[in-house]
Image 1 (cartoon, helix red, strand yellow):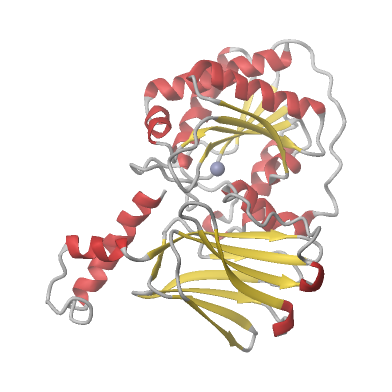
Image 2: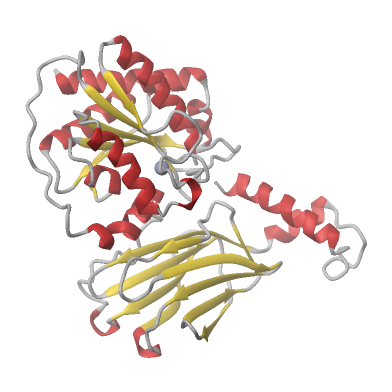
Length: 389
Ligand SMILES: [Zn+2]
């Protein structure tokens, strides 16, 4: 994810710096690419902004590649809490604006304020006893700036917030952002469907994760999650059609699913995907993704199902991930319960599949190959066959 972002970023800034004549920063009329690369190398890369909400607290975590100094200030009308991170740059994959979805804070925005400063702005009307901003150093290279909003007196225990959580997937972040808006109508999803055996005539909703302005994760050589997910979904569509199934695709192009396109909120976009399955009365819903981490070590396949969903959803997650593991030869990270929006807000057994890690060099390469795409589709197909029996 970092590498491609850096390239985009450095290009943009090279142009800006060249335009500025390099006078301020380099003292020469032309900044050489190498100089710039070194400069970026000494800056903190802001890799992600994560939001989690509990009933008594909202936590916003800014993930940085290294320790970074920051300054907090407050602006009014409407009240905004501003964190300026020094000697830092924001990776282009970080969403510029996110709804927080809580009563403690409304919106968080992040931008490259100037060549050296990343500015994070949180709209919140809380007084200064009700928010706290502090650095958190993690294991190896991780560094975080944590912003807590809400009832901070009892937040240290039992708040349900995972203080040392690994960076959550984009799905989790999007879900956290959307949870409170929709918490009332959903929740129960436990009816166990009974299926006739075989794939023939079954209505399968396939959701190729991300698309359009939402690239998803990006691999070390620039392969995008939105591209891989679409290729696998389309390959799988072909095979399912050959088996006599009916296939509902949330998208067949590099585009958003919501009619609002790039202007859709996270929830609108994810709901549009659910609508494809719900309106088409799909028998199952399968969302296809690539996993990602801040370093290239993790690898393997994970199947996710809705924590309060049907046992069928859990079985679906298990069978399709096991199918992938068998055909691709990836490591099996198991099946896990989750709260992801698309598995929660679909009316049928649903699973979200993280096929492999795009942040892992080997798996990025594998999933960018024709053979990898075919094997992944074949593996999922086998899982679906097993699911319907
Ligand atoms: Zn994804």
